Picture 1 (cartoon, rainbow, N blue to C red):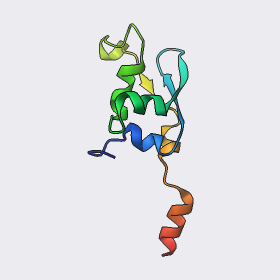
Picture 2: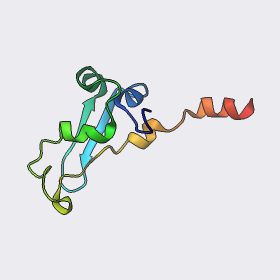
Picture 3: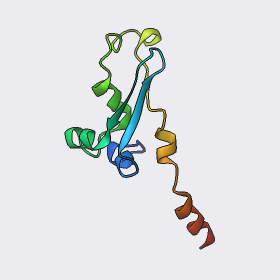
Length: 91
C-alpha cells in the first residue's frame, strides 16, 4: 500500500481479476488486473481506477447523480491470509 492507499499491485498480488459494479445503474463487469497493471502501473491507486474504466455519461455529473463505481469483492481479496495470520499469532 502506497501512502495508505490500496494499489493495483496490491490487488494483483492476490487476484487475477476484479469485479466492478455501479450502485446507481445496472452495470457490472469483471476485469483483468494484469492488463490494468501493464497500462497504469503497480502503484496506481484503486481509488482512481474507476475514472479509467467508467464509460458512463454521468461520471462528471453532480455528486448526487454521478456514476458510482465500486469493487464488490475487494474487501475479500484484501483480507489477510488466514494461514499466515494464524502462524503469526502462534509465534
